[in-house]
Structures are given as structure tokens and as C-alpha cells.
Amino acid sequence: MPPVNADERAYFRLCSECKDPIAFEADYFLCSVSTCNRKKMPLQFCSLSCWDAHQAEARHRDAGAEPSKAPTQAAWAKEAREQAESASPPDVRTSTELARVPLAMSREILIVVQKLKDYVKERSGMSTSEKGIVALSDHLRALSDRGIEAAAKDGRKTVMDRDVLPLVSRGMESRATGTIDPDDRPDEVLVVVAKLKQYIRTRASMNTSDSVAKVFSAHIRRLARSGIRRAATEDRRMVMDRDFLPPASS
Image (cartoon, rainbow, N blue to C red; front, top):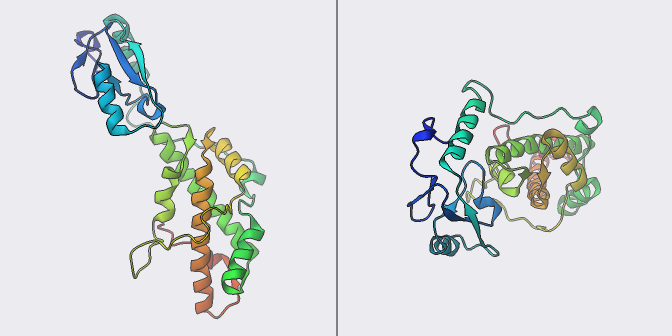
């Protein structure tokens, strides 16, 4: 946020590359890549050579330098004061307020049931409890809520794989090697994508990257393999809800 004494500011912004000041009403450049133009932390460049240096480091596949014009000092100071006046007090909640979903949506199955049952059967010859499917769906909803919060903190309106990957990776490492078991079917999706996207849109009016369903699918398969092992230790032929879910801390 701009400083409170905005009228005393001598320049518009600092160049993100060379750190030289960009004067009010001066020409400058923005990167065309959206992730470089976040509202809270935009990147700006005083010259094409500085943008070229940024591009060489960022290695964007398809990017350009977009010409822009710095505002007048008076216009910038007015905007700064308006931002300061509309800022939330420190004691107000800053986390995303999630909307309630219809009861039917809160109970929907988010797993492609037959694919999961076939996966468990092929690996172990075991059957899968219906309660286990319900528990996994509830688990994915909880992970989606946390992914929404991560996306909101990053100032995005799309939940992406990087929002949920830290959540599903935690607690899944092998005690022997400290690494996560490789996924044996990385391209197979076990999540009902349309329902997952609708849940996230209803909760937070956010979009969902297709990569999220792939991350969740790999997570489900890891939970299934872990559940098979748990069921086997109790000499059972059915994987149950208590076998599927990871520890509460994960």
C-alpha cells in the first residue's frame, strides 16, 4: 500500500529490475504475463532493457513489454488516500469468507466410484466400503476449502495445483525413504471434475485449474494404497473409511 503521506512522494514507483525511480507522468513498461501484474505487487520497468533482463530471468514462454504511462502525482495521491480510507482495520478477518453450499452439494460424491473400486481390486483383490467413498469426498471438500484460502492469499480467482499440492503431500512420505511413492497412473482422473469445480465456484466464486483434479487423483490413489496396507494388517478383505483417510495433521 502507498504511504500515508502520499502528497510528498517524489516518484511513482521503483523499477523492478534496476530499482531506479519511475517519475510521475513518465513512460514505463509492464510485463504482459498476468502473474507479473498482481494488484498488490506489480512489476514495472523503466526501460525495455530492464524488461529484457526480467524476461531473461523469468523465461516466460510468450510475453511482451506493454507500454504504460505513470499517473500525475495528484492522481496517485488521491488513489493512495482512497485505498488507505477503505483498508480493513487490523482486527477484521482477512481470510476468505466461504459461502454455504446447498445440503445436497455438501453430500455429493466427488470420486469416480467405479474407477477407485477397480483400482483397489486390481492392486489387492479387496472391495471398497461405500462409507470410504463418502469419507474421501468429504476429505476433498476440506482440501478444496484450504486451497481456496491459499489462492485468495495469493490474490487469485483460480485454485491451482500449487494451492493444494502442499496439503496432499504432507504426511504421505515413506518412513523408510522420506519420499512420496510415485504415482502409477498419473493421467487417470478419479475426481468428478464438474462437481469439484461447481463446489469451489459455489464456495468462493473461483475457477479451478484442471491440474487440481490430477493432484487430487494422485492423492486418492496414495490413500488407497495406504488403506490397502492398513486393511491387510487387520486381515480384512475390505478397505473401509478409517483406512482411507490420512492423519488429522495432514
